[in-house]
Image (cartoon, rainbow, N blue to C red; front, side):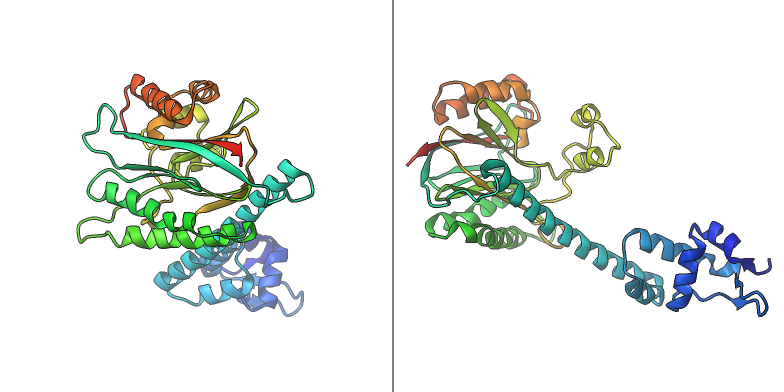
Length: 355
């Protein structure tokens, strides 16, 4: 096959002639020849694989300078470079998402002005765990203190229980430290890194345990929320139940991308497969948010042993009943057992009251 015109080459590479001219100008994809009379660029069909690679990298949003470096590497090194680039993009996006969540929470709860972080509230809380009706061991951990609420769900198997306990234990020192509300998220982010290291430290030659973690830390009237995995945090305010977290599961990612609907996700055989957890992957990535607690709020933290089997309307009814946190925890566990309790059940219920 002879040389291809820029139009034919652009169609074959799924690029535009304008893009090809730009890549020529920056020395990224130089034509095989230029017609001396017309000035038309001509391309060798052998350049198509490189052109298609450039097109795919541009769709990732990779800068031209980085693409030039990647294209000069052998395939294995190029794959590593693309992985590193996308890891950084994901970390940057997560950081922006956390900032957006913080701003939305403050603006939706307090208009354009930050709520007073020094107006004190307190919590009345209770925690409970149950092995369930199918499992023969418990890998969940639930903790409820005056300032710290936490639930962790260790992956079933060797080390799961130790992993969930280690994750919660790593956060407990936070409850002993006075900190400005402005510093809450920074302090919590550091504690999550400590929790991740603690879970990784439990690894053996045969096993690397992992765990989810969802926790709330109170400072003044501010609540710092940290979340990794598919344990959940809910808020009951003025009779309305809101989910404050998003599951870090493969199925939820498919829902977000429009590949599954919620009905399909609820019964999917891979609905419990995590894409984020403490102890798993190369670097922990937690969702962080800052909320303003109001007297009358009721928070629920729970493992999927509750949320995956009990209908949300029944959860809301249990939380809305005029019962104290201890009785509500027992009621929620009984609801899960009434649905067969195929998994461990962990939950924390906390009522916000004026201090």
